[in-house]
Length: 264
Image (cartoon, rainbow, N blue to C red; front, side, top):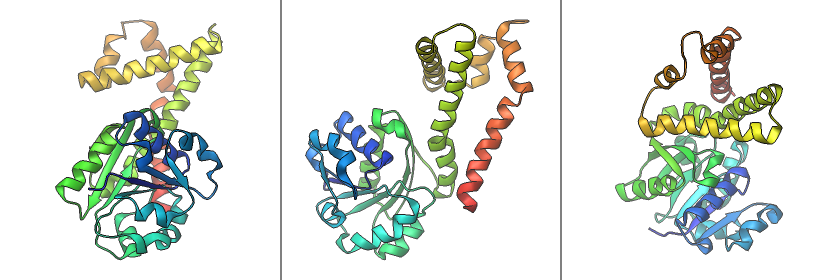
């Protein structure tokens, strides 16, 4: 299939995808065309060889893969604006929260391979967790889109009905993790570290903990047991956090974010 990629929407996520594609060398910089009404914020990408512009129709016409990365309320207008350029050669990937494949099909009114992908902003450093759902796609198209996102992190192919849940756990989850790290830094400062050192320790510790689970395939409780000794400081701290609602508040936050997407 045509290797050229159009990214419609040069906001935070669209830009992060472009940066990740460049770093992973999945394609040449000149094979990426990213659009935005105000291209001033895209100049760094332009300097790296990425094509930058405001013309969605031009970008779509010359691409094989179209990544839709606009705000949910813009989807209908943007799709209607370039749908005449969509042909059987195109594969459409939406990274828009809350917009279903059915919603997209009803606008474009063409039977094209359509994917829903939910990456997170770590895609810019090739460390995204991306969940994929799709419709009308053949094995070649599925493999291409999966390979693209695999170069940018981890990929899970899921039933589309779970995409809202994936948005919360994988995309919103980045913010949840950052808030935990921030609190850890603040605690570190309180017990004597300067902010820079506390930040390094907190971030690397979380990274190491995540890698233990990813590489060893263990359950978090198994790893917790290894660092909690009887009457020790770790279990004392964990118990105090739970008494203060640590796990329950996180679970409630996840559920609240999910219901916000579902109910609007």
